[in-house]
Amino acid sequence: MKQNIKKDTEFALISAELLIKKQELKAIRYHCNHIKKTKTYKPDHFKKCPLCDVNTIKALSILLDLLKFYYSNKIQEEEFNRLNTAIIEILKKIAIQNIKNFKRIVKSLKKFVKKNSKLKNVNFLNIYIDEIEKLFFIEYKKPLSITEAIKLANEAGF
Image 1 (tube, rainbow, N blue to C red):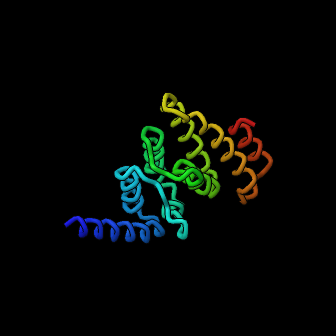
Image 2: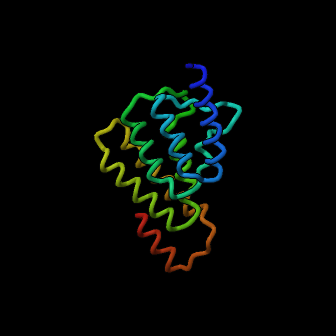
Image 3: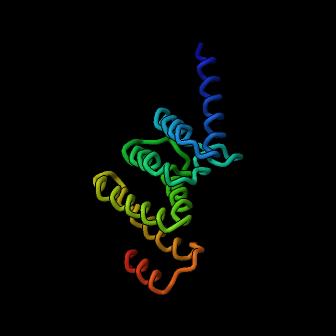
């Protein structure tokens, strides 16, 4: 019986991995819930982390929920392959897609830090917020007018 449950779980995870590539929110949520349930984040060294394929702003609330879980619980993870870092890298990738995503992610992360400031190490997210802001201005490809550039720089606090 346990072997069947384990096989079903493995099949569901593989299915979720494939659907994550298609940006299916149910699959993203399933994978995040699996991490929460097992309190383990140890992606296969030979395969990319399935969550790293997420590139839709629609997954923001799911990712922030997983980030809160990370800071609220003890997660089994490897020293150099951390869940919070993976989530931040996903958010960076989504933020540089367009101005709207950038503003939403930065605003959400600032709100997250403020709301969860009592959780251990959450304040270090401010460093990542700064990184996202700098990366956006370096990576974002759409040409901006001088007025737009000044406005964005002012909004980001530069």
